[in-house]
Length: 87
Image 1 (spheres, rainbow, N blue to C red):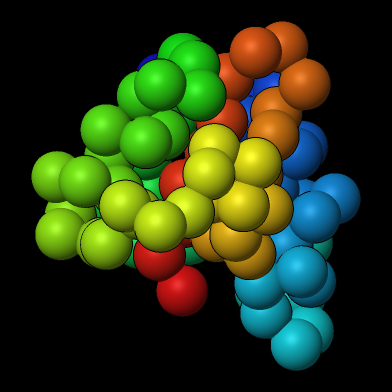
Image 2 (cartoon, rainbow, N blue to C red; image 1 turned 180 degrees about the vertical axis):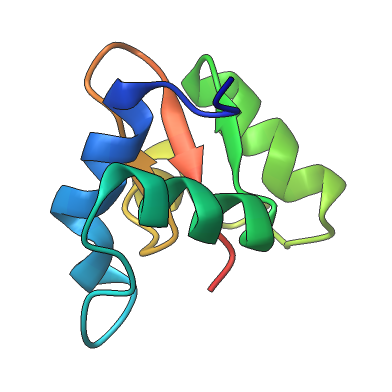
């Protein structure tokens, strides 16, 4: 059983070059393996994205939610969830 669903994996495959200079995965299985190795996180809302960064010690005090969501490691899945990949 996969840790990440197809919507997450397809989102990463489609948008991965915004974080990396060249693709790191070409198939759903490769994407799953890469995201697992990176300990990528899927959160259910903008608020959870902000909480994630605060818990990781990232100073978000001067940034608004839009700026944080535009960070290269944050991928909008398209169903209200977000994938966070530490490059």
